[in-house]
Amino acid sequence: MSATAISPEEKKEFPSPGRGSIAGGSRAASLYCNVLEAVVEHRLPPGAKLTEEQLGAVFGVSRTIVRSALQALAHDHIVTISRNRGAFVSAPTVADAHDVFKGRKLVEAAIAREVARQIEASDIIALRAILDEEQEAMRRGDRHAAIRLSGAFHVAVAAVCGEGVLTTFLRGLISRSSLVIALYGRGAASACGHDDHVQFLAALEARDGERAAMLMTEHLDHILGDLDLARGGGAPVDVAAVLRERLALA
Image 1 (spheres, rainbow, N blue to C red):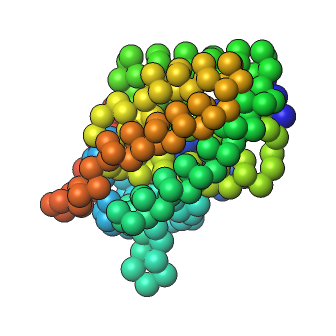
Image 2 (image 1 turned 90 degrees about the vertical axis):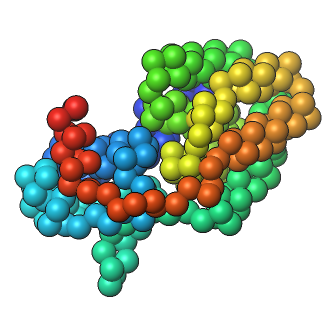
């Protein structure tokens, strides 16, 4: 599959309501997006409890719509739902983060070597277009968009090889690592450094698979090294107040 065939859903690889249908339409999607943004902005810390009653009151929606949005957030690993305890902002552990990035390094190094063999000029153009969008998002300080677009770049690279097992597996790893980056990232590097991407794409364009694999491994190590995995939930937050403030800014 050529990178020129990237779908809108692939381009929004960082969790978004567009990845799947959410019962409740725009109201559930609005709830989803506002919770996600609050997590990415570090306003809702790992472990923050999200109750149906509280969310329903803030957004003026029924429990059915709240449950639909929470299920979508859980599907994308933003929220963890416990049958007996309710819903909480997910809190990946240090071990979780290391496991996810270890998996990504193994998978993406292999993908880099294969893509270097198959890549065409049209793929380079499509990948460079994503990097242009990523750079613009970073320029305007849109961290959510930068994380989403960097994930989209990695998926688009894999898509050059087609929709095989590795590409499918990588999508899940990127979804999980995007949450880790959103929660624990300290700087621009954790938003998947743009310069790293540019150098990696240059190696692909030169069809240098070994260099591309090395650069990808180093790139993922840079991201992991930038994470503040010691960050805990901190003091309790007023979830309703945080989300009302988000709605006021929307």
